[in-house]
Each structure stands twice: as structure tokens, then as C-alpha cells.
Length: 73
Image (cartoon, rainbow, N blue to C red; front, top):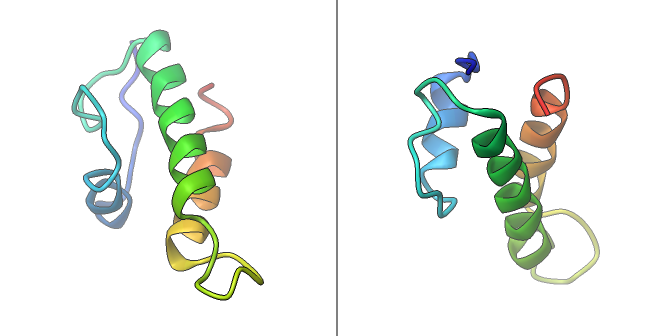
């Protein structure tokens, strides 16, 4: 189990991602894997801007979090 040092902004964003656990607590390897999967799904559905020409703010947040989580996954 590991407590990931999320920033306040990251935790606020993670509240918009449907997760069956609190990411601010100690996480198991399985929970970290589920978090990565949820972020990948979230970016797939909400990551493009309205015009479809690039990343939306949600997409940028997801991508940044996925990069941040890479050492833990």
C-alpha cells in the first residue's frame, strides 16, 4: 500500500472521475491500476476539445495525472 502525494488540485480533479475509493488514502496496487484505467477512460470520453482539434482541459489534467502516476503503476 502506498499513499500517493497528490496535490490539492489533483485531488479536486479526481473527484470528477468516478472511482469506488478515495485516492487520498493509502492505495493498493489494484486500486492504483483501477485509477489509471479510470483516467484512461475519462480522457477517452472527455479529453478532446469541442472542435475535436486537440486536448481539452480535462484531457490535459488526465494526461498530467497519468504521467504523475507512472512511477506508481
